[in-house]
Length: 208
Length: 208
DNA sequence: ACCTTTCTAGCACAGCTGTGATAGAAAGAG
DNA sequence: CTCTTTCTATCACAGCTGTGCTAGAAAGGT
Image 1 (cartoon, each protein chain N blue to C red):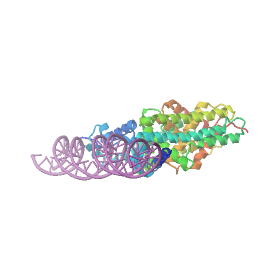
Image 2 (spheres, rainbow over the protein chains, first blue to last red; image 1 turned 90 degrees about the vertical axis):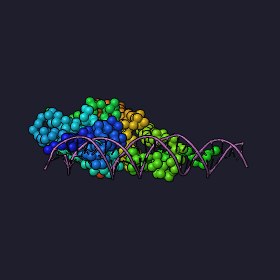
Image 3 (cartoon, each protein chain N blue to C red; image 1 turned 30 degrees about the vertical axis):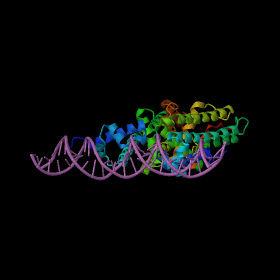
């Protein structure tokens, strides 16, 4: 039944090569030829799996977003509604969740790097606009979900405006990722995670 | 004494055209031909004022950074050391200063937009690396200066770690600018400024 | 008048891009 | 075996890029 090569695996191989090129040389230089070379394929072979550059880019970006989304959903499921947990445990779960969005190791560094190039390109590339907007809105929705569950569990400092705090925390995560990717010497992984933790600690209710 | 055209003005004209192209079409599509067309010049004329593309880009980016830096320095001078001012006045000065870095009107929106494309490109373009790093470090130094002056004036909440707060506020400003530029429907100017003000208010000492 | 410098305009070339088209190899089905 | 589908490989072409080069116009100094 199966032919010699698994097409799905082939596509993954190409997408991985694309990500390596983007991380190393930037989205701008991720031409079909460069990606084919990186994947060890002939450009003709590559084009057998992706009819056009647009299709490759679209598939690749969607793959990455799906992968990260999957991880986030898994963590959300693990966390449940955060009710009936100790404050420390709650903080740990929420921190771990949002840390998926920070470049704290090689894998996440690569993801955030690709995502940054991709987001910047989406501003003037109509082919990327929808997905980029989707993910930005998704990130905010995720932060909203996290903070409102904390709020429902009574874990937030009283007197906070939820929407305002959602915007602030989302911007913080975005900004930390941006600097950590572009200027890792100015913000290493430890400082990056530390800033997030400090912020979450400040949002938490006092006592206990 | 003066020839027919002022070379300096000509260069400014070209740089302005470059910025318009970058804002409209992205840095990627800001080719010499596109910039020359936008400026209403022949590419040959453009190349009389900028020998190479690298020279144009370097000059343009440096111009923009210098312009913003100038504005910031002027505001710093106006603000003085923040000592002996009412808390409200201090907050007003500091907010106005940091708002120079947010895309709150067309001018700043264009600046932050260009700066974002430029920063993203600097990750893989050696020609941009130094200046991009300089400006990122400069932004952090500015935030450090602001917060430490507030601290010296006793205007900060006690118990704050200065360096940690500098990282947090810098990331917040970066993140707000990022989203406001890429997804203005998710974060308009009012929300952007509001988030900054809320954060600064939270850093401020209570009482007064 | 002439000369020099400044400025504008354009051509040509090599290098890259995505993509259409073609052709042959590989591999399984009948 | 033959036939078909899948896959690999390559050529060709138009379109863009930065840049070297040339030539003429424009303008001011002498």
